[in-house]
Length: 609
Image (cartoon, rainbow, N blue to C red; front, side, top):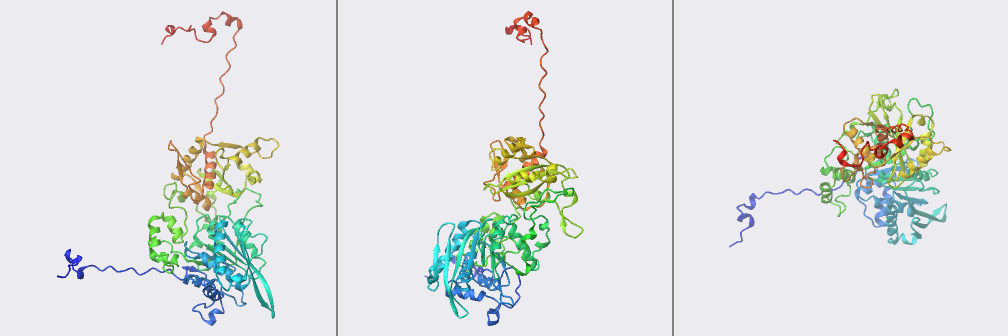
């Protein structure tokens, strides 16, 4: 007797069993969602297409020499980012690539760097990242590729592995005017800071994780190494940033504008506030200009030489949108270890703003989580108005008209001191604004004493005990008390219960929609992502260590607001001195009267109630 199937035993025939359709395998998109359109027909590969790009040469080098099989998106990018002009020079001098994490950015940069120094012959490739360790890991991967290649290994002249000075040096023969010349090329690494690249003349600059550049210091130091080069390329690779990613945000906006502004980010009004937070404290009544004003125009790129290639999920899509996954992760499915299941697991377990930034390459405004009621921080932002020339500007009603108080805070790495001011608007509501963020502490003295700023400052404060900024507050206090010092701004201590009271009042003002502020990226991100520390009595304070974006910009604003709204305690006058008493009267008084005991002799029975 034939064995009975499990379906038959349960009363269900095989014919009635539902058929589950198998989901087709998810493959990442080859083309980015947003990109600078090419000037020539670059695909499919043909002799005509090869004449307009160096990309196909790099692809052949990767596959035939390095034995690296590039993903479709990497090949597409190389072909388009290395497009040539009529005169044979590279079309782009700056290329920005936006793509989700773990999709192969490092491999792409390694292949390009090795082709540049081993084949094309540019003298110097300079690789950078926000921390030196990351840059060195990418560099080490490139060194491994060369050492494992039968064709490239003989070209190695020297590999310097000293920490902080790592370099790969290649010596190759180049035929020029029927003569053979030995040429040395190098691939060095540096940390992305204000000193990076100074003293070097670079040709290919690799900037990894440009999203971490929260000011223009490193960008200015590194990219200016290419200024004297006829041929050079700056390649910036990054995941999506947030509101503090000032360099990437600026370049992305320019790239989107060149691509037709598909997401509408060029008309959002975000450009109202300069990315460099050094806004000065000038009002319409200030006559003096700040000589140290930093203008974003200084870093303006030539739109014709900037290429943007962005693999990202479309705005507004569900975080479960598989099409968005494929658009932001072009390596999914092509890389055996990177599957749809990997993304699904992250989507299920990550906080939404983390998943969207890291896996969908979507920009976070820092509004999904934070210490305030949902949406109230954004409701307190001032809306810009169009000026006479059509440019956006701060509305007259959104300006501080009163004198101001100053709040200071310092980042946990002691890299920056943030200065905020607080004052009252014409409508009577309080307003806070970041006015400066600079390296070190010494600048704060002159900044507050400069011109008409000093006339408006009532006092300054910052956490006076237990914080990074406490030493600065002590120095300011000592300078104020020194008669020989020109600094005369009153400095008030802020410590103990005043800290938690100040934060409580700040939270109440935000949640009750009484506090106004401009749209300023560092303050917005710090305020909307701060993690609170709860004390035993229930009081709270922003926790610098636990907050993903730090709390220094926020605490500078809280300090200024506390000083503006605090209730000043007035000490009661001392009691008047006792009336003069003649010595003869004291001698005639009883012992109890002389002791001021009101006639009580010490016997409790004599006291009336």
